[in-house]
Length: 254
Image (cartoon, rainbow, N blue to C red; front, side):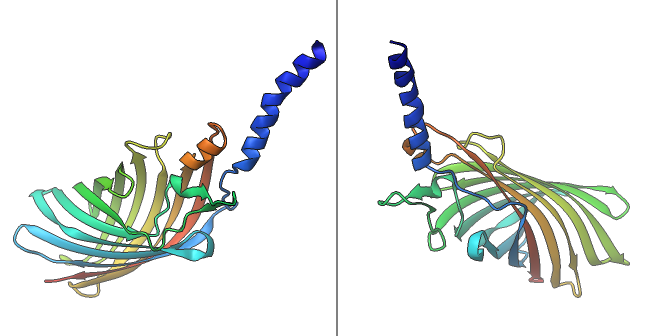
């Protein structure tokens, strides 16, 4: 009777081990991996509105697969220290939790997303204030709705910037920024992505600015629906850490 109990109790553990083996969690490299990002932005002015077009590409993850995005919209100045904006973004190459899946042969992989278009509505509120001297503080509060997977998120980006002035004309800007991306209707964590930026812009003319940036980026992958189904309700949390080298060119239509 004792032997029967031992064998019977061992069976669920064996099945769980086999199930877990059949559904591996995605892996992430140890340490930080290099990524590269380039952005071109065009800003204009139409009365109280400031139209904006932003084209960004990031070479990321294994094999530096590209993520591309085009954002179009406009800011409006609701107050001397507050801008409100509405934008529409089309992107491809973005990776989501449920992109971790398997094929008919049972091989697990990240679903390719380089040619998958996603449409996103963005609402933005950016208050800013003087911190004394040539320092300015701001807080970008951005709501995003991704129509591809019906996911909504809130992005909070506080920033401190220092301006190098030649009289009243800005000649350069240095900034520190932190970004926290909060899932509103998905995931199991209080945040899924964080950035720590440092960068600068040189203003050779009133119409053109350009400069480099460097950022620490942490992304947390959590359990995909395919993994949960294959493992009988198993879960995982995978941290992907990267160092992002960036270059931004900004053109103002005066």
